[in-house]
Length: 394
Image 1 (cartoon, rainbow, N blue to C red):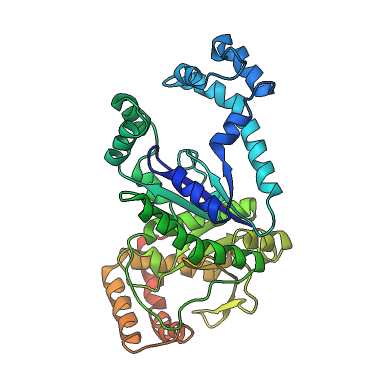
Image 2: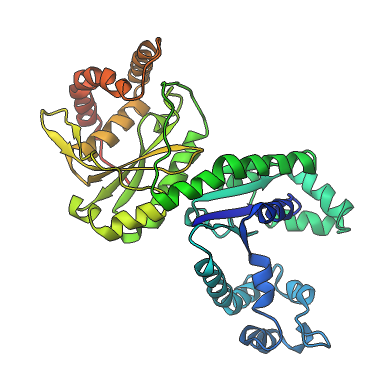
């Protein structure tokens, strides 16, 4: 099963995307619909709301007057907290039930307006954000929904801003144009990413990388890496001490393959071999890759590790599992931080990469061509770490 989070600011067009995904075959779990279900007449949640906010929140037919309740809690943090304490347990229980009932091969889309505000992006295999700027959304709310401009502006201001949404987004669906353009994006996403992603997760298939190495610089790596690290950390829970974004994509401005390298720090590799650990990463879309159990150490020894590959067709991800404090774990963090701190070292490494890819080269050959340089700079990295008092900060 593929778990997809879908969100967007009010007036962004999220409902259009949700409806299209349902047409394409997704099982949509609508957070707003569930929020209405759990406060229907006869439910314990509705009784508790009436007890807290008074009978004026009920219509003559016994249903909840949602607009009236919204007026009572809007701008009153204490009242809102009381309402959420009543409704959230029921909402999450119903949501969990819907996910549990989904078929094993389902693409389940959680249509969640406050996904970013609730910091939920790590809970999904992929987070989709429908984006439109505040002026566009304000116009839609006033022109299409008949909202007063002041009320629409207040609703927009109360939600997360675009910077927070972009940081949470694996996929940004731009909706500044026509509905047809938006739906075309959704259709491509379904065919090219969601369907193969689900198949890869279900069968434990790592997304295959391109044959040739292409170097690029992508400013989005600065948010993609931490977002994926948070997803892996969420999947593992207390099984990992920490998860870090490492490798070239963790060094701003450095040309690299479009690969996000993550390092999972564990107390012992025996923890990484526990079936629960392996299953947790596989369920999150990072199956164990057999045969990769060590790196070539810079001290003449092998540095043990475990390796998992990502299933997402839209992003190559390598997950290296190493013992915290081990030589390999320290090297990955120390080397990354050295490159971040030393412009000359970055330029030297970038020049090496450019020289290697000046002629077409296969992925498997690319790392081997860099190894002599890694060996040569090892002492320089150690000297820098000692001179600066470097520590592997979390």
